[in-house]
Image (tube, rainbow, N blue to C red):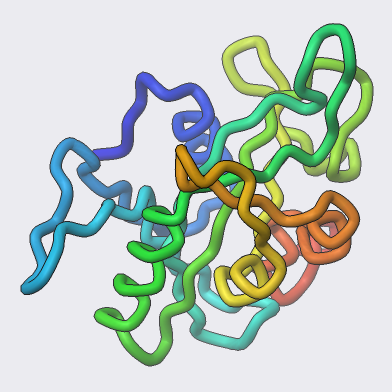
Length: 181
């Protein structure tokens, strides 16, 4: 099951339920064992009835929780780092699932100020906090990601590129915006 102690993942699951999007929450307690290595589990398998990326696309979703903006003294927007292991595992899962599946990094932003990466009507209020969800398909993220820390094996997209690539998850999961549904 999803890590419901992680408020970012719990909020994303609440979003999926509120939008009536079919999903499976994945048990993250143990890494999957493949022939040559272990794989970090995805967080969710999401299967919207029709997606903007192509009818029938199902998503292997890895949720990344961040604050928006991050930082107290100096506010930082669009934090989007992830680990090399996350990207490698998503790539391998997508290959295993095959046609009809794509991999998606979902950045679940806990909104800590008035600013939001999505329009106000796309903000989810959950357990007294506000959340915004944006996604970047794996291939797009990998093409633009730059090393952040070799020691920690982290990468991030430059903020300007991330802003251009990131889309509200509703735009990725549905062929039409929520207002039209």
